[in-house]
Length: 615
Image (cartoon, rainbow, N blue to C red):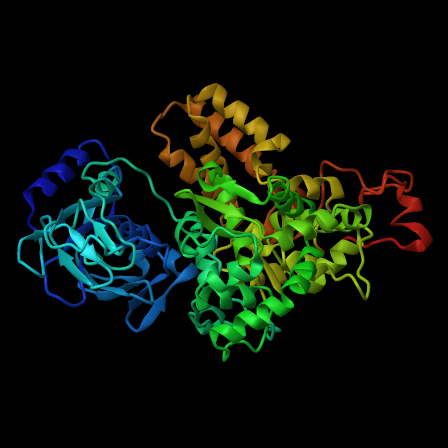
């Protein structure tokens, strides 16, 4: 690999047109045991993450049922959000490290950084540059070439030797993985196509956090080593939420077609039953055998579901109602990509189940849930979920505006909009139970954190430096509008940027929206001048008018973004160490109240001298 003349030739060709260079890692991948029968050599941009190596290995060699996976590097295990570490930050030349896929029927691999090269920036970010030839398995009965695997006998067999009565036999068209014959893995030659040399597919590290373990209730503060102290715990359903297709197709083993909750639960594996019970909040269940676990879950099931539904917002209720209105069943292949992760959420809760009918995968709702959903279709419940919806959407807006909040701050901000708690209604319960459905924030103890924040401890330190600055007051209507997942594109300043930029640059909508999202995240972490400078450096056109346009257009957009480090203030509201709003006049007694009540300020938030000191 180090002396490959073809790679050198391609690098030299691109150097003539590219001015900048970057690090490209060459990594060998082999089974931990069994010699060099299987091997892959991967070429990868050093600015990408372990998560990209994980996806590459899954695509080429191991993916079957969406199992958990992780890396062990110098004694530390990387899983969940730690997969977003850049490889150039944690790997060096000659480093050897391990990879595990599926912690049940595990495939163990050993990886090694065999070279790090400087390549032009336009060089393919991820390439498969070499691998072993196709594997020919031998029949363990007669020695002939085998294309069939008996999962019951755990052996390879040829067509002549297979037992026709063996229902656990699968035919393999393509065999070239150390996972051949394990779990439900089936190789696919076409999976290589995305990674062939010279491909121009673009990758980047997602700033959205992968959901990690829960159980941080006892955290009351943070310290320097918080992230290093977090243990790596395997939570199957957290992983499944990010692989919703696998949930629908594989995780529940395509269970029986039944609407009886007893049959549906009893048909699951103990692991899946335990996950549902744990997710619904059941405790003291780890020592129970399967039959006792089923008995306890069924005994408490309806009450747990009702309790969970009391915290739903309108969207989740409507989603369930769509199944009840369809007699409790929908065909899996008719479920669109956007809806799949929502199906995963309800599978977590044990409200929906995966099954097979007439050789077709379906998602069904048990009779007991259909009955509950229909009973809830009344004014009292609708009023309850209407309030829940307002709470969820207001917080989702706060999450985008402020980025990082303590629970006590959230409750204080809600008081601005006349939403307060009672003995029977706790704001945090509603927000916490919406976390996995919307996947926009994560909760760690008293901290509620936007999923796009890379290092919330550092952000918290920066925010808390502004000791005399309160969280920016934002109108109720603006916060509610920010709850929309397309807010950044649909906002007035987003639309203005989109239209102005499109009028000068011929760019696909998807690419431009990606640019808008990148700018939105970059300005959260970097100074305005640095973000604009980086954009201008990437602009190949040296035309001064174009660069001036870019500077003004991008700058105007960035100044209208609410920044986490300034407690929700925009750049055009910040002067020195204080925050003011240049666009809005100070609120007067007869102005409409900012809380969205529709009343005048003097008759609402300023009534009886209840004036909120902003700064």
